[in-house]
Amino acid sequence: MSIHDGLDLAGEKGLDLVEVAPQAKPPVCRVMDYGKYKYEQAKKAKEAKKNQNVVNVKEVQVGLKIEEHDFNTKLRMARKFLENKDKVKLRIKFRGREITHKDQGHDILNKFEEGIKDLGKLENKPKMEGRNMIAIFSPISENK
Image (cartoon, rainbow, N blue to C red; front, top):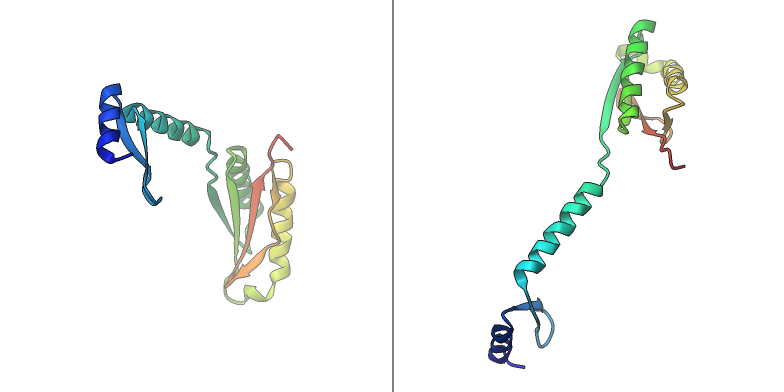
């Protein structure tokens, strides 16, 4: 049907002629209420946005020579982040010659993992990035 016939048909019905597939040969058009269509699309987008789950990554930094009280403070922070369903990135900083004592870094990591095992789990094995050891913990979901 020609464009003029389509526009006349849409005008008779009080609707709009909307091009739905412009790349097709010939282009495909549809007679519809465009305002209602846009409203429904916006409503669907709003509903999808409401149902999406945003995961934030919060970072906790510790040094190799961290004292017990400071470690417990960092552990409490990480527990709070995991309770809020955020991921926790643990960064163990090695300064100077401390880089030769990676085993002490693993000890801190294991102690940290033990302290949050009821709320989170280690996502993948820790890796070294320069002078930092990085480990990411994700919250344990209730539906598992």
